[in-house]
Image (cartoon, rainbow, N blue to C red; front, side):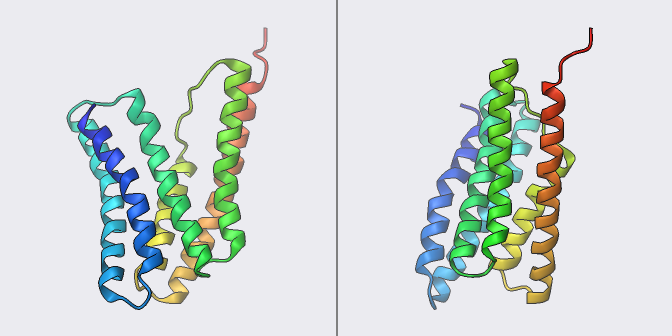
Length: 179
């Protein structure tokens, strides 16, 4: 197993640690600091695994699958917890979760109908991931409420646009090739 894939698996392993610390930190500054540290380190490992894969030329099919999976798992757990705590409205979680569900279901349909499992990241998809993580950071770390409010709303808008973009690209892949 490559170093990059090990780092990605570490990120996946940090997700339940983050969730437990998030839920158990009530009025405990030490647990709050640990929770923030674990979250920040999990995000840092996203940069590390990509860097390791590029520098060591270790891009693998497993890494291509695991890295976005780790990102989605961390984001989903974060948004579930932030919704549970009341930091974001339920509709924001529904937008985030629905986009990912649309992508997975769309990929499955394209795969079944075309036997092609190729999926390429889209610019709006990368922006969505960045803004989703930025929203979580803004809500977990002490930033002004007004700033967090706008980051979350911009993220929700870009998430919706990204879902539309992926649906449009997926529908293009299902169009018959002209003869």
